[in-house]
Length: 291
Image (cartoon, rainbow, N blue to C red; front, side):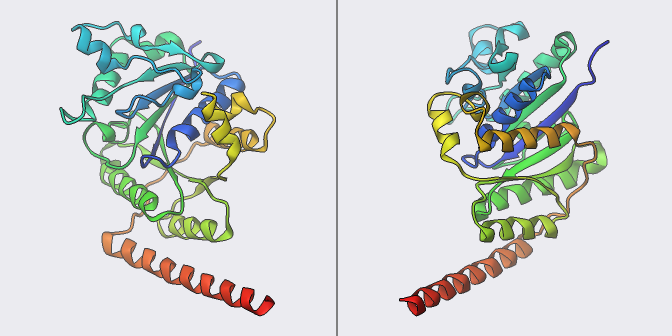
C-alpha cells in the first residue's frame, strides 16, 4: 500500500538559515525511517548540498537548457539517509524569471508521477521567501504543500519577509491555497530575541513551532558539507532538529495567519527598537553601579 504523502513548504528570507533548517529536518526524518524528498526551490540551487557532502547537483533548468526533454529521474540524486534531492534551479543572472525553475520542476515531477512511484512519506520544499510572487508562490498558491512553515529570526528583515509570506497565504487561502503551520524561530539565543519573535507570533496569530539557537555545531557541520544530524548526531543541536522534525511530522492543523499591514509592522518594530534602547541603557547603568 502506498504511503500517504505529506508535502511541506518551508520559506524564509535569504541567509536566515532556511536551507540549513530544512536539510536537518529532512535528515532527521530520514534517520527516523521515513522516505523523504527535499525539493530545492531557490535559484542558487544549493538547498541539498549538505545532504550530499557539499556537492552540487544539476538542476532541472540546467538539464532542460541542454535538451528539450528530460526524464525526471535524471534530476533526482540520493543523499544522506537515502533522501531524494532535487534542485529546481534558476536562470542566468539578469535573464528571465527566478521562479520559473520551480514551476517547471514541479510540473515535470507531477507529469511523470515521481512522487507516487517513489512512494514517498514527505516532500519538503525549500523556498526562497524574500518575495512571494510568481513561481515562488506556487507551493502556497496552488496548495501543493499542505502546510507552510517560515524560518525567521528576531531581526526586522526576517520578520518583514515572514509577514509578507503571511499576506500571501491569507490572499490565497480562499482559493485552496496552503495554510500556515507556524514559525521556526531561528538564531534565538537571548531572552530579548525570544520576546521579539514571540510578540510578532502573538500579533499574527501564529504558533512558534520550535526555537533553534545559533550554534557553532551547525557551522562546523556545514563547513564539512554535512547536516548537523550527520556530522554531530550526539549534539544538543541535533536533538533540537530532531524535536523540530517530530513536531512537523505530527502537525495536522494549519490556519490562516493575520498579517500586519505595513503601518502596523513599522509601529511594532519601532516599539521594540525603543525597548532595546531602554534595555541597553539599563544594563549600562547597572554596569556603572557595579564598577
